[in-house]
Image (cartoon, rainbow, N blue to C red; front, top):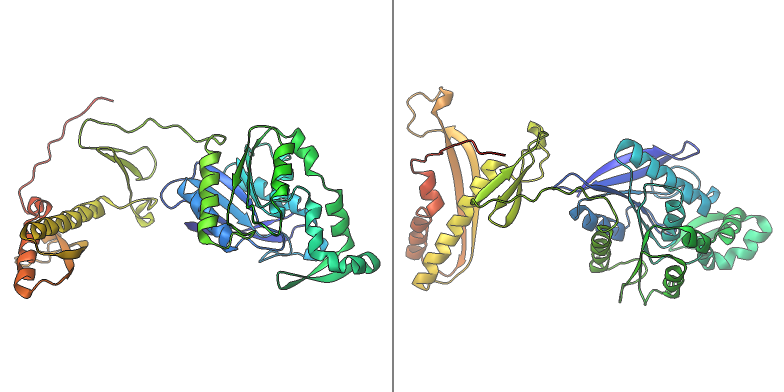
Length: 404
């Protein structure tokens, strides 16, 4: 996951801290905005795990800290549910102006309620996913119930939530009491995915049933059986990310590309921009590229690295093939390969750049009980692997122009 640190302004001009998580092996086809849970922040482990799973599906994820939380500016006491929705709308506008309009919005807990309200205001959003979300924002009032009387009398109070102290004002309570998701869900005609755990003790699963009942189709429900509210187990948060990515494919715009196909052993396709190349080896899809330092996107290995990989794989296979035939047990073969340009050992004019040759430095590790004589034989066999022999042979590349 490639993560970009970002700062953007809310409606009051305060700076909000954000991260844009980008896929490492392709350009994103879709952008998503993520809203974290009440009093949490963008760096919650579960949020990062969900983001990674979405990245693997080609979806970029914009996660940020609401005003007054995490690394964002502002006073939490001056915020409420309405201001959180405003922050989300602003985040969607920022992504649209600087990248592309977000089509997917995801919210955890109270953030789930907030994304439903936001989707109603952002036209580009096509799909909404909620995780452990309450049916009514006022559900969070139980977290500050012990201070409700003090807040009512004095206008504010210090509240401990999750081991941290927050100052909560009367306007926050008044705001969440006024919010209704039912009306928005009944009016909305966008795809909705509700993910909730039956064992959620913070926001009971009955909330998911109410959300589902109020919403129009297309709507879906996924039971996160065994998960807690904060998705503290990595397998749970990864599962959530994978489910959202698979579900969203039906509702977001993914550019269709003609499938790369050929009757030949290998086919490679490269467009007008950069060096990111699609590679199809029989029915196996690969990506080749160049590092960013030479104008590539670094979405895949370079051509020379693929050659090195071929040498390494052929070496390992040849060793094991020989050992199995001899009934010599080798538990594991590890082959390290580096490629570089170097002067030939017997060069007459080493100052001449043309005297440089391709050098593949290969290191072989054997996890075995072989004796010294057997190991030496294995090293001899390694030099006889087919790719090794090809690299040492005279090779012809015959080129002809095909028709597109």
